[in-house]
Image 1: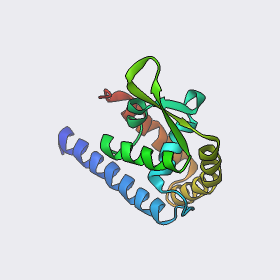
Image 2: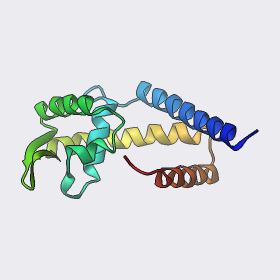
Image 3: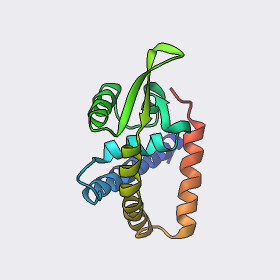
Length: 147
């Protein structure tokens, strides 16, 4: 087998594992009030300084296209989970900030979602394998130039 073939095989295995796990997580997602994609936005904002980010910076962390992110942000802003405001440093930019209500639903859903993730991941991998998987995927992610 060539290096190229091994690289493609490894990519396909990684991609299929990700899709399989994400599909399973969607079926067991613990809340009807928000979707997995909405939770992902709240999760990412909760990790940002001041629970706020420019849309373009948030978009780099999400698995959605820019138009989908904009529509998603409009929906969760209408529900009071985030606020949108003009970036004072750049009039072309928009800052999205997690509200108290958004943080509360993130925390409520997050603990149950984390339990589901742990159950799925530990059903196939032991502790050493989980550490190795995290190490390898971090190495891959950090070795790829961001767009």
